[in-house]
Amino acid sequence: MRRMLSVLLLLVLAACLVEAQTSRSADSYFRRAKLRLAQGDLDGAISDFDVALTFDPHLADAYTNRGVARYKKGDFAAAVRDFDEALEINPRAAIAYNGRGNARLAGKDVEGALADYTQAITIKPQFTEALYNRANIRQEKGDIIGAIADFTAALKQNPKLIPVYNNRGNARYAVGDLDGAIADYTSAIHLSPRSGMSGVGNGNALLAFNYNGRGNALMAQGKSNEAIADYSKAIELDPQFADAYANLGLALLRQGKASEASSNFEKSLRLDPSLQASLVERINRVIAPKR
Image 1: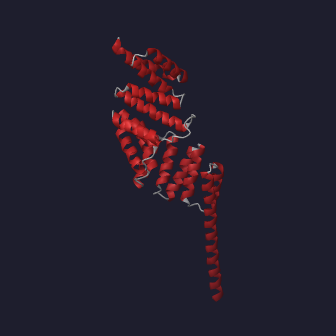
Image 2 (image 1 turned 120 degrees about the horizontal axis):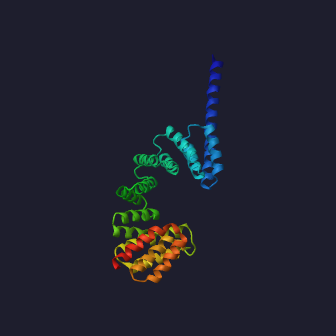
Image 3 (image 1 turned 90 degrees about the vertical axis):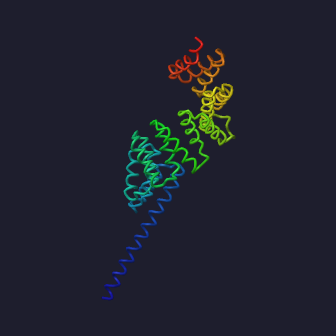
């Protein structure tokens, strides 16, 4: 009897040791995978998440993070499957809902993405990224008031998010809140980094969008000189910004400067010939009262 008890104790101890070793192994691969993911080594990260999941197939965070890696690689269907697995294990994982929303949106499943972002926010009401993501979908679907509410909630969590000010400015402009739009574009401009702005890049492009947006709102208020200054700044920051050239031309045309306006229209259409139909329509609206 004593010998049997000893054997049982040894078996229990061995099982505990195996479980502990398995847990350590899963954690070790998971940690390295997270590091690789942060460094942009997506294939290495996915490989390590694979191994971590062989040791612990119930590691929800591994599925979530592997989903993120697969999403970044452009494998949206596989990413959705990983987020599905994560949510099967942990149905309260707001980050997995947000991640699945991103993957669904990239796969053109707009309604599925909207449902996922909403679920993420239901679980975690102060989830800034999910609020921003849902706001963008609402704006695209024409729910401008809902979009503004989500943008505002996101900014309460982080008042330094430049793209959120830009997009809320667009939404406010769309509903005729010109003062609100100008305030948002101005906030985005003030928050933008002031160093290294001589070259053209993503930072310059976003800053240029905000100058262009503020120019539109100023123009709608009849402040053509201020609008022209903003359009000119947008072009300085991003010389490939076709719409800013078009807007500058229209503002100059309103001031009776037809030659300068024509030069900007030509530059706009050289950069983006697809603007021709809309530009002709906008020019006709400017000159119609003078006929």
